[in-house]
Amino acid sequence: MRPENEWFKPERLKPYFFVYEGIVAVLVTAVAAAVWYVGVPSDVPLWGVSVPVAAVILVFAYVTWWIPAFYRTAQYRLGDEDLEYRRGVFFQQKTTVPYNRITNVNAHQGPVQRLVRAGSVAVHTAGYGGQMGAELTIGGVEDFEDIKDQVLGKVRHRRPVATEGEDAEADASGTAVLDELRRIRELLEDGRTTD
Image (cartoon, rainbow, N blue to C red; front, side):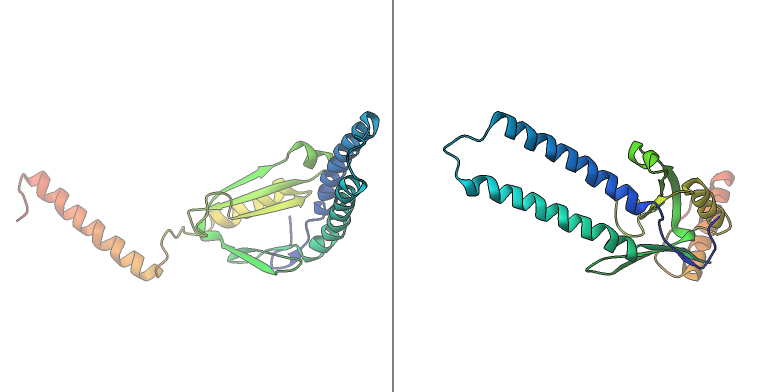
């Protein structure tokens, strides 16, 4: 269980990213070895080989710097009323998902995540943020099943809210509609029609 109202880091996020970087490094090395073995045609100028090699080295250097920088900014918090996620190396972002808007919570562990003993928890809402996938994903954590259960425990103790308006307005309009439906049912049961 994660402590409530305290920010926590995704402890397995950095190794998870580095494994992906390692996989790409192996693939790039294999391609470079194949090119070396086959040889570079004599009509290709030196810059035609050195520019792509320099670009690959720069990308790897940037990604190697970016992974720890992103890890330092990534934090989650299980609050009393909502779930929060903040991150961002260059542009700081903060996502807040109220528990009463959550419709589904999934735990997931792929092969690379299993390799680094991590998993992720996807939190879905009914269109709260206007997106089709998960509203928020807690990734790179060891206790992903426990976090899923903890979020579900918070969701189960709240009344769902499906509108953007005030709760009192929603309750009043919902009650009025229900009263009208009851009146129509009574009229139909009596065999009468409305004017």
